[in-house]
Length: 192
Image 1 (tube, rainbow, N blue to C red):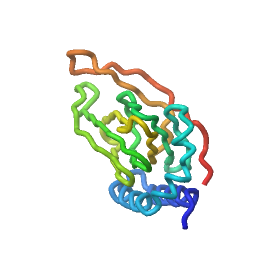
Image 2: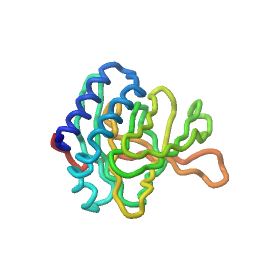
Image 3: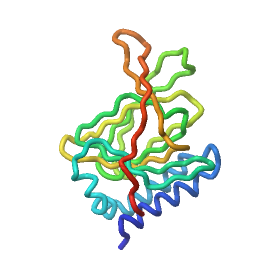
Image 4: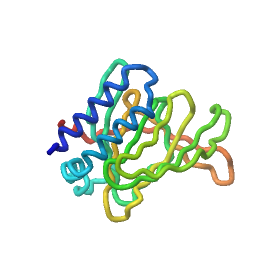
């Protein structure tokens, strides 16, 4: 039987192996990571139960990173009902997969910074499901844990370190959004 640490190590290693190019095939990576999550779902849920049960709020945990080309792999813990502000990813590409629980992801894009944000759609992610975004277009999204009782866990792979990003708040009755720079925090490393 696989342990959750073995599963996390496999997820990290696959993410790092598939991201040796500047613009990796995110659909292919999503399929491979999703297959691992489906196969090892129980081990991941059981092994990461401390993150689901400690109720310290939204947290980001580092699983691995590489400098060139830049890649970071994170696990995030989403408290019951938690919703992020609408936010960008500072021009990084990214892929996000559910490990435990269900997330709603509402996405926007725009042709240029002079244009208003346009709603692209919503995705609902259960364990092994993924959504991704490229680095070449202005993109933002808002994520929400669909459960009111349980903490959700997700795996995120980004094309670099997401240290700084911007949150957006829609100005009432306007097509434009007010932006606010943010600094991302990592709660700590997850041992794999």
